[in-house]
Amino acid sequence: MKATWNGVVVAESDDTVLVEGNHYFPESALRHEYFTFSNHKTMCPWKGQATYLSLLINGELNPEAAWTYADPKPEADMVRGRVAFWKGVQVTE
Image (tube, rainbow, N blue to C red; front, side):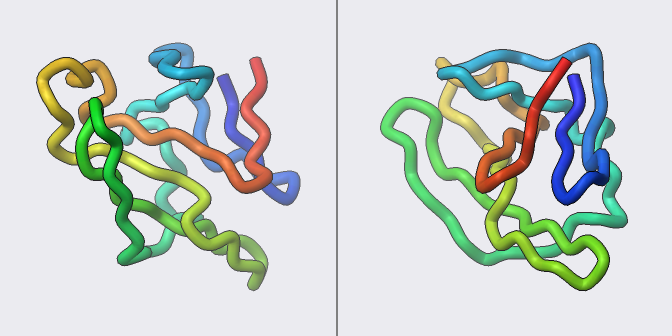
């Protein structure tokens, strides 16, 4: 699977986990040079607290385009150490 934004591959892996229609990539699959900090957080009733990352590519910012669960609830442990995408990031095979 590949995650692409603005024509740039930001993550690539053959080891994704599909949860609620979202592919969760291992953190090691991210091209970290395109990611930047975000202090945005949300709460999922069954997965726990999500923290977000923004994308910065060629001077364009896509805020909170990726999210991760650093310490998911036990029933969501399959997403631990993984990152999913939205906000225009294309995930394809």
